[in-house]
Image 1 (cartoon, rainbow, N blue to C red):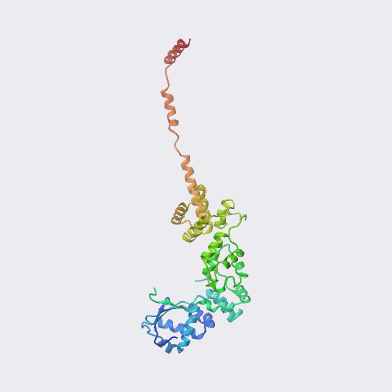
Image 2: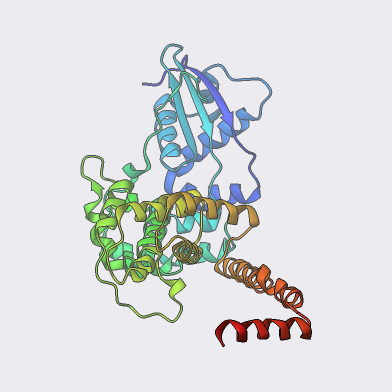
Length: 390
C-alpha cells in the first residue's frame, strides 16, 4: 500500500507537443479516466520543475487524489504505456519514468488500444478520430521495474469485436511484401495467438520469417500455435524458427523472376527440390538476413553468385566475405548486385581477350630467318646425300 512518506523521483524522457495533449484527452482519457490523466499531467508538471520532489505527499495535495486513487491511476498509466515504475526497496524509493503518448494514428492502429477504443466509443467515434488523426506515423541502478503489464487489460475481447476492428483500423505500412496479414489474422483464433501477443514486434518477426522460409499464411498459423509457450502464453521466436526449418516441403511453384522466391525456397530450387540443410538455413536467416539486413531478393543474388564461384558450395566464410564487401560498396538491392556482377564479368572477359600470345608465336619468324642457307650450301648437301646413298 502506498504511503505519503514513500520517497519518489520523476524522470522525464521528452517534452509533449500539442498533438500529445490532444491524444491524451481524446483517445487515452475515455479509456483510463480523468483521474489517471490528472495524475499523468501532474507528474509531467513536477518533472519539469527545477525543484525535485521528495515523496508522494505533494502529488496527493496537488491532484486531490487519495493514495488509493494515485496507486490505481499509476497502474492504469503503466498498462497504457504512459509510465514505467521502478522501486528500490533498500531506500523505499519509487522512480516514475514518464513515457510519451502514442501519436493518434498509431494509437488507433494499436493491437490493444485500438480495439479497446472501438469497443468503448463505438464505430462512429472511432471513424471520426481516424479522420481527425489521419497522417503518417512518426541504468536504473538498484531499481527493479514493477510496471503492470498491458495484457491485464485484455480479458474479454470477442471475435465479433475483432472482426469489426479489423474492418475499421487505419491501414499502416506492412513489414512484408508477400505475407498477407489479412489472411493470417482473419480467422486466427485468440486461442492460437492471444490478442496481447499480436504486437508489432511479433507480427514483424512472423512476416520476416515467412519471407525467408516461404511459408504461407495458413501454414504459419499452425506453426505459430505450436510455438506458443504454454506457461507464459508468449510467442517463442526461436521455437518458431525451429518449426520453420523443419517445415520444408516439395516446392514446385513457377515464377517469372526466380529472385522473387523466398531465399530458402530459392536455394531449394537450385538443388532440384532437395530440402535445404539446417546449416544453410541458419546462414541465410541469421547471417544474411539478421546480421547484414539483406532483403530477400538480394540474398538470392548473393546465393547464386557464391554457388557459381565455389563449385555449388555455400561456403560460410566466402558468403560473409562477399556480404561485407557488398555492404561497404553500398549494394543494397537486387538491381545493384546484378549490375556489380555484370561489371565484374565484363572486366574478366576483357582481361582474357588481351592475354599475351605464347613466346613461340613471337619467335617463329626469327627462327625461320636463322634457318636460311645459301644455294651453294644446299647443292653441296644434296651432292653428299647422293654419294652416301647412291
